[in-house]
Image 1 (cartoon, rainbow, N blue to C red):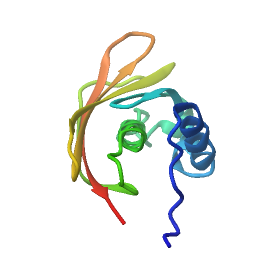
Image 2: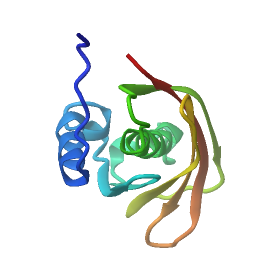
Image 3: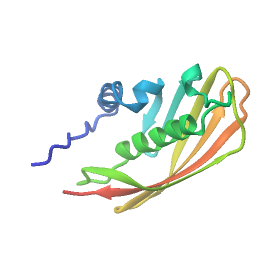
Length: 146
């Protein structure tokens, strides 16, 4: 018997479950919100606050990575193959090509490869009020089975 909880399979229940589980962990601490979650796609956002900045006064890259990584991770949960019990990240890459200092950051994550043993996700993080790209992100997930 695993101590890992089973993921709800119905979309609305899964969103509520992930919101609840994320509330007291990094997504909740950073204020990351689910906008859309369906198989092969996840959209999330966070409102930029002082806690998201580095000591140099610019948006901290880790805040952007956390948003994109959470979007690809939640997308992975919604897209797990039959029989899978979870996943773990085996590689991630980010290219930071812009910044933002106010408003909302939005991450659009899309499944690029959905295999039985791995999933590859691409995410684009944009500044909502300007539409400018802040970062491009790729994440490879190893799918776990009992």
